[in-house]
Amino acid sequence: MPTASWTVTPNTPNHGDTITATYTVTGNDGTPAGTPNPGHVTGTVTVGDQVYQLDAPLTTPGAPATPPAPVTYATPSGAGLTFKQDPANPAKWTAIVP
Amino acid sequence: MTTIIGSVTIGGLAIPLTADVTLPAVTPPAVTPPPVGPGMLIGARGKGPSSQSLTAAFAGAESNLGNLQVTRVFYGTLPAKHARISDPGVLEIISYKGSGGTANLTAFCRSLTAAGPAWLAKHHEPEGPTDYADGAAFLADWQPDYDVAHSLGVTFGMIAGGYQYRANGGNGFDGSYLPARADFYSIDTYRDGSADSGFGAIVTLDQVAEFQRWYTLVKDRGAPLAVTEYGRGTVGNGEVASTPQKRVAVLGPDVQWLRDHGFAVFSLWYSNYGPDGRAWCPTDSAWLTAFQALTRG
Image 1: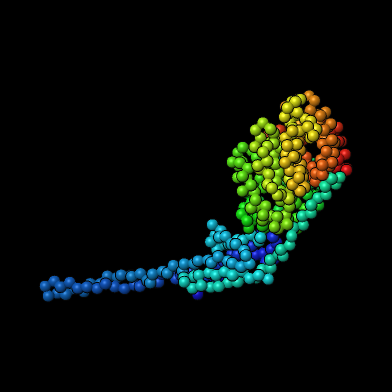
Image 2: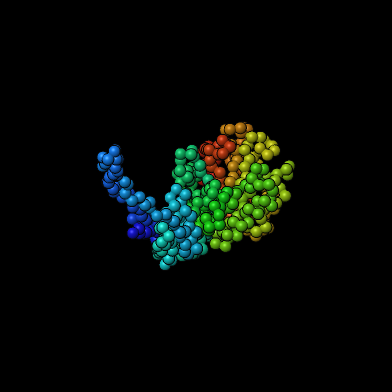
């Protein structure tokens, strides 16, 4: 089960300081592909009245992998602060203390 | 205590988050208008090579010139927070080109509260031909910033480029770049000493036509007046022979004229590394002695 947290620093800024809010998501790893399933393919061939049993091993893939769930980060808000998203890190938001 | 609210949505599931911060109190900046008349502040802008910090440049100027009461600071776009370059108590007159937006300007103005005495001016010497289309364009840019800064208690003014107040085509001559109301009016005045007559000549301020034209335009507007950059002679770079003596001769009378006319600030441009590549930094002992006499008051 994914979880989310964040840090907001500094918590006692001065005018002109930059407040940085950084989200962290953990456990959003998706699921790996399942274990392959070994098995056989069988068949018969009849030649005249002779029946031949045939067998070939076959391993089918396991359950497909599930990718991490999509994550979106809401714009932080409060106290007249205007947060802007870091273009290089969508989990990071900054606001100048007016 | 203020609560910041955010949330993360993971695969359609929204997870709300909160954080508490303590924002600073909003208090008027500690900007104290300087005395006028006999108490006129004397200072300088020191500037060395680009490798030298502005703080070191100020200290260097002060070691040569005596205790300075005012200096100049320049920004392209304002940072959110002002970093002083001078001693505590020194009035820093700050110029900038871009505010970075109203929120940034507000943050900057409020950051002055703890920083110390400061004045602010947008786009000093705006009359240059490549700066604004005309005075109306400048005032349309200047006024909104004045409104923000002034409302926050910051002393916000206009700094004119002296050479643009010449009668023969200076953009400022008609006064169109001067706001009707400002917290101070200032001028940057230079004479390069490249001639014995005309605009290259060093003469006392009462004879500097472009300065007097500007003074006539602003003297009755009810705000403090200042000289934010004063340069006389380019120190061995294109000067005529008489310039060093004239530079010394006019300094005292010019400062006295400013005092007599109620000016609040006189700030020397004291730089070896001007943008025009010329030095405005006298080093001869006669001139240094004359300036030190001013800073000793």
